[in-house]
Length: 162
Image 1 (cartoon, helix red, strand yellow):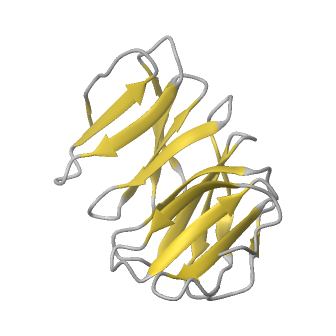
Image 2 (cartoon, rainbow, N blue to C red):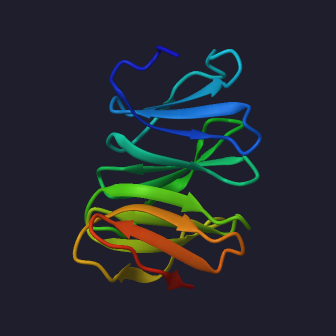
């Protein structure tokens, strides 16, 4: 797996473990065959700045990428095409992403210390960005029943039900 020109910044694995997605600082996403390490398709060119984080939907059909330009993008795994435009709501770079187990919601965390919920189908923000921390959100998880988001900022942990 050596086709990135710049360093790899993030990776995600498809739910069926057959595909690996990698994002690079050269504004590309690559899909790889997990068994052979061979690229499945040409690099997907990002219209935004470098990718910092990735997530794959539970059904394996959508890739979500987060960039340092505050944008979240959805990608069709089959075609490699962007789905809709940039999802904007944060005021600083995206640091982490997750797709809910029921595939209805995307959650993004940011250097701006907020979480944002997005409608996975339309890409529209669901409510206002949630701020409950004084430091950046660096990781997050969604409960198996999709009812709770757990953000992990640099210095503490909290639970947010939605």
